Image (cartoon, rainbow, N blue to C red):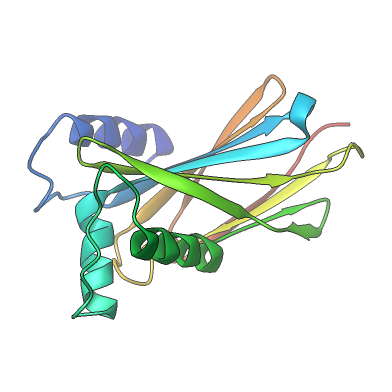
Length: 169
């Protein structure tokens, strides 16, 4: 199935309000280079029930519930989840990703994080994204990269959890 089809199916899925038994398991992550701040702003979106099911499987007695207002336990879990499952390198140098927080939008969990980069010329990006892949075999992770005027999208699965892209100089 092509990336366009997955994006279409994801959008259709957003319009359906019963996520408990959704047929498609997908997350989206936007990686946006903000040059005036020397920052890469990253936003990931997940179906809340997928993350809650992951928490229940890892910690059956856990009482983490996603609420409109952040709480310490949930933020700790999400910070750890991002750190374990998302990695980014610029010009072959690993960057530290800093978790900022989350918010709820209907049945989606939107997570914000970022990293910094130097003013040196950027010519290569490598991203590792294994969100929910070890938990849900059919999970697909779409990563959108916005670099200046260039927009690229990548589809990651349990067979391919990372991509590398070289920008033209």
